[in-house]
Length: 396
Image 1 (cartoon, helix red, strand yellow):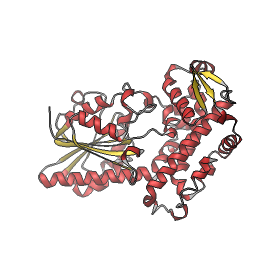
Image 2 (tube, one colour):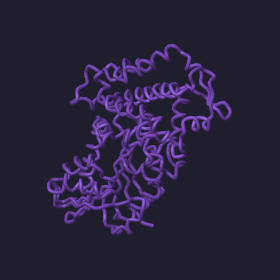
Image 3 (tube, helix red, strand yellow):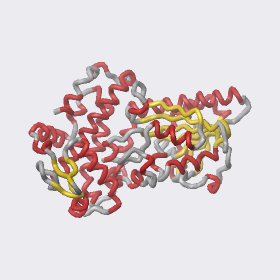
Image 4 (cartoon, helix red, strand yellow):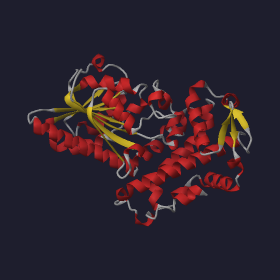
C-alpha cells in the first residue's frame, strides 16, 4: 500500500487553496510525480495480466512473443520497450536471457489488493486530497482513457486520435495543462520575455524587438506573454508561428485584433528557415514552449533556428526535462513522441532532454550564458519541466 501512504507523508493538504498552491509547488510536484508514476505501473501490470501475461511469478515471455500475441506493428517498438521498462523498474518483471519473467511481486497479496483498488476506483482514491487534486485528477482521467485503449492502439484496432480525442473532443488533453506547474512556468516565461525586452530596449531605445514563438499551437503560452508585452507593444513585433496553417489562423482570431503588434506565419523547424521565407539575423528572441522535444533531431532543430537570431539574441525554451511514466502511456501513444532519430542524445525511453543536456546542446551550438530554471524548490537536475535561456553572442 506504499502508493496510498505517499499521500499522508506530506502534511499540507488542508492548507492548500488555488490561491496559495504555488507556495507548496515543490511538495505538490513530488507527490504528483511519485503517485502518478506508481499508479501507471500498477495499472499497467494489471492490464497485461488481463491479457494473459505475467499473471504469477515465473511466467515468462520474450518481447518477440509478446508482439506476436498482441498483433503489434513495428511502429510501436519504442513504446513497447518503454512499457516493459516501467514494469521492470517497479519490480514486476525482470530479464532472464531473452525473456521477461514475472517476479514474486505479482503474487504479493498487498500488491494485488492495491492493483484491484486502483482498477476499481479508476484512481479516484488518489485524488481525494486537496493537496494532490489539481495535479492528479486531470492526468488520471487521461491515463485511464489511454490505458483502456492501449491494447487496441498497439494492435492497430484504434488510432491514438480515437482514444485521446474521442469524437474530436480535446478536453482530455487540454485539461492537464491547467495545473499549477504549467501555469507557474508559463507565467515565469512571460515575465522573462518582458524583462528581456525591457533590457533590450534600454540598450537600444529606438529598436523594434522581433520575437518569434515556435509551435504556438492553441496559444496557451502566448496569452500570458502577450499580456505582459502589451504595454511595450509599439516597440515589439511578435511572430506567432506553427507548422500548421490552421493554428496560425486560430492565433490570428484569438490575438490579432487585441494585440496589433502580432504577426502570423507558418514555420517548420525541421527545415532550413531561409528556404521558408525567413531572413537570417531578423529575430531577437525565439520562444519554444513544449515543442522541440517533438522534433526528430534536436541538434538540427536548434541549428535551423539559430541563423534567425541577431547577435546578442536569445532562445527561450520551456520543455519537459524528465522522463515521466504517465507521459509514456498517454503522449507515448502518438507517433511524434517516438519520432526522434537521435535517441542516444535523449533520456532513455523518452523524447526529452534533462536540463544539463539542454545546457550542453546549446553550448555546443555556440550559445553562451545558458541559464536553466526548473520548478521552484526542486534542483534543476530533478525538475520535470525547465525553462532554458541561451544567448547567442558570437557567430562562427
